[in-house]
Image 1: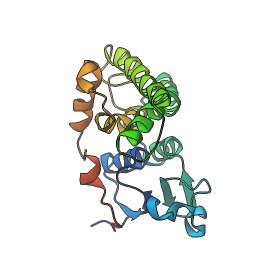
Image 2 (image 1 turned 120 degrees about the vertical axis):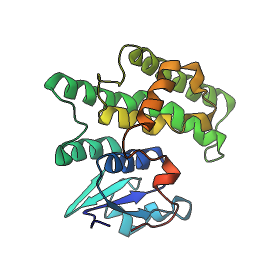
Image 3 (image 1 turned 30 degrees about the horizontal axis):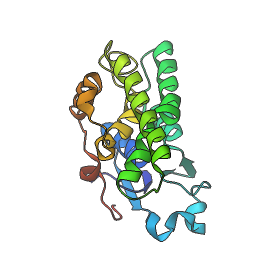
Image 4 (image 1 turned 30 degrees about the vertical axis):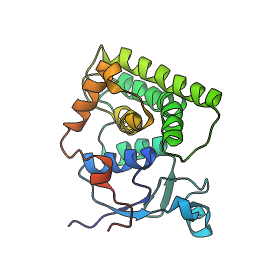
Length: 210
């Protein structure tokens, strides 16, 4: 196996962790993986906080760099590896817009609804309804955009697609039926057909991986 220059810290069932892992594997880039046991509070320990000051997953170590926040990591990797950034200035700008939109409008509703469904988060019915409606609103925007193109910023996939897919791949665990958003469902199929693609638990284990 080629020697890896990247070490990813995260959790296999974490959408943000999966985004970074998926980017690396789609780029054909080997990486070491360190499982961060959130249930045991590993993300709040000094050794992890030295890598990610926010105490969140994922974190990526590349040489002397300690990188955090999945969208920012995706941007860094697209620059360093020269892939999935967008072929021209307009596409790159649209891609950045989708990155910020995903973090603000798509992932929160989906991820929190999923966390409630899996028992990771407690919420009263009114709050859970707000989260679900936010997830559905995000899916509606994404579906409408994908009606006009194969990928979110145009004809080819970018880190914007990888970011959004990291949320969508877990959406049905929160009770969101992708069949209700047919353009999103078709796009998810195109993402899964990309060379090197792997599903979350096929790509990452719930333990360290070298």
